[in-house]
Length: 239
Image 1: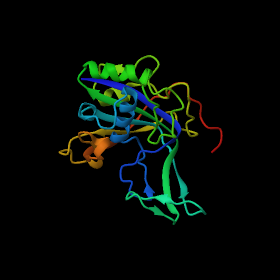
Image 2 (image 1 turned 120 degrees about the horizontal axis):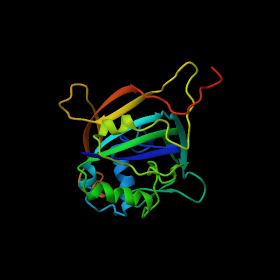
Image 3 (image 1 turned 90 degrees about the vertical axis):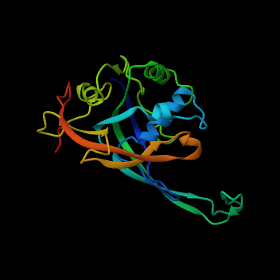
Image 4 (image 1 turned 120 degrees about the vertical axis):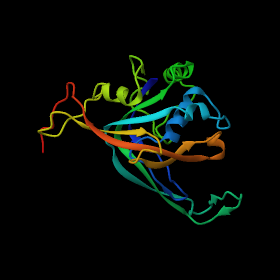
């Protein structure tokens, strides 16, 4: 097996998996549907395309810096002379209020595991020269560093090993460690089997032409932590 590594780092990210109507949630790490959507943007695939080949890739995430959960309170319409268009085509005169959650200053190392075939090479090339703008869950949330790893992201390693062996932190950002902590304790979120007794379920597995029909199924994941040797990282000077 081979693993393609990419980095999702930015001031704002949102990876919703249960969003409905006026409540727009975010997971604490990138969702499978969100990552596949980013790949589709890089490859220039329209919403009507079947994404089964991308959805078959096994997803893993190393949380290099946990984001801070924040909330935006949005209003739309309600003022004089305007309204909000309903799905039926009619116009509502009432304001629509919504809560939209996002992660601030999060940094993730993402791995996609598959057989070492042209698809992984095609994805890496597309991340370097994307057809459409890449975003971190919402179109307004753009990466602050390149999504591709500058030295190349393909590793001839299984998913967990590739994520665990990659240096921390990735340049150019150097996260400070808490005082007295010599090495970071990093969280891993790895796609697994439903037979795993410790699995959790996420409803973010794209099915077929998922982005045209909004069809997503269950996916099993497991979470774990490991101690990673830090490279060139200072400690915080304040408690």
